[in-house]
Image 1 (spheres, helix red, strand yellow):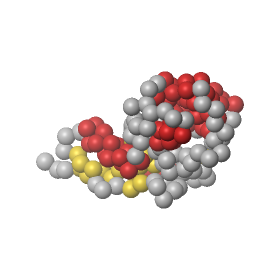
Image 2 (image 1 turned 90 degrees about the vertical axis):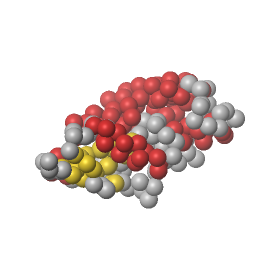
Image 3 (image 1 turned 60 degrees about the vertical axis):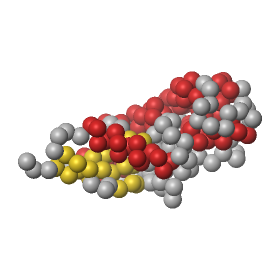
Image 4 (image 1 turned 45 degrees about the vertical axis):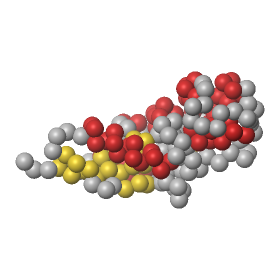
Length: 183
């Protein structure tokens, strides 16, 4: 039996595939609604971070739970997704030049598997991609609501991809495409 080897290419979203201004506002509105925390977001570092890590950092700052057991985090991510979707209806994401062509070429390569490796919560990631009309290129990956440590997202993405492979198929080492050193 011939073994098929796929090369995974994991993409970050913000700054790599697109730019959007709606994300910070959605995070801010969800914080206020779910936790009652008013944040200006001026000191929050999103680049190269996970949404869960940002939420945990803010929780520590506000005297809340210092670990991933943070109560109401599921509700927080639901509300953030809601506000993000509404914000992107008004202020559409801007694609990075050449992204559509690059993804089109990669999708035509039979031994390439595209995935996401992003600090965005899963639902927010796909909302951004849907508004940019890129969602059809990606099925799964590692997301910023699955683990606070960005380094763990690649492991999770690879595990999910391995479970979805047909028999006789394996993954090569792969590539990560991002815009920050933490990617």
